[in-house]
Structure formats: structure tokens, C-alpha cells
Image 1: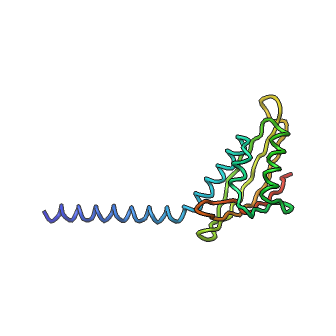
Image 2 (image 1 turned 90 degrees about the horizontal axis):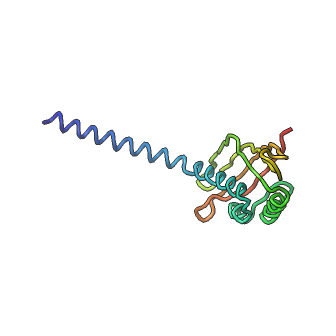
Length: 151
């Protein structure tokens, strides 16, 4: 009887230890996962040609290349969507660095494609991105972005 009680106690302790380890791991990666999910949402918004959804992912004080603000980013998206019937954005590997509970950075490359006919895009360019993210009212928003074309 003593042996089975000890087995139950040790089994329970192992389960509790596993749950604590899992919760600790989840709490450490939660900001990283949230930023990755927002990047996926941004890609889906671009693929859907949804300028409103693109803008909703940006912080109110967003700043991009050459001082582009949130409104300018939306205008750029509108222009690209008008110029190209088919627009795509394919993210390469993403590296996320969590700086605090409310700030993170993400670096990645993007293959941006556009075209007006056929199965293959008529235009394509790879860009390297460095982005900053901030937690605003419980949601991660894109605070800043800097991109450079790869040649």
C-alpha cells in the first residue's frame, strides 16, 4: 500500500512539474508567438488586398521608410493594389527578439510579387525588413518598419 501511494504522489508531482514547466515556457514565448501571429495576419491582409486590415495592424504612431506614417502606409497599399491585380507577400524565416513584455523586434525577408496576367507574377522583389512591435491595449501593433531591397 505504501508503494502505490508513493507512486501516485510521485506521478502527481511529475504531472504538476510538467504543467509548471509548460506554463513557464508558454509565458516566455507568448509575446513572440503574438508577434508572429500579427505578421501572419499582415500577410493575409496583403493577400486579400484589404487596406483597412493592413492599417489596423499598424500603431497610431507608425513610422516607416522616409518618414512614412500610418496614413502613408495605407496609401502605399492602395497604390500597389490598384497597380497590380494580383499581389502577394511571402515571408522568409522570421527572427523575433522580445525586448520587454510590451516591446519586440522582428527581422525577416519578404518576396513581394505582383502581376496582372497569367499564373506567374510579372513583378517580384525580395526585401529585408526590420520591424518594431509594441503591445497596445492588449494587441501587438507594428510600430516601425525599415525595408531595403535585396539585389
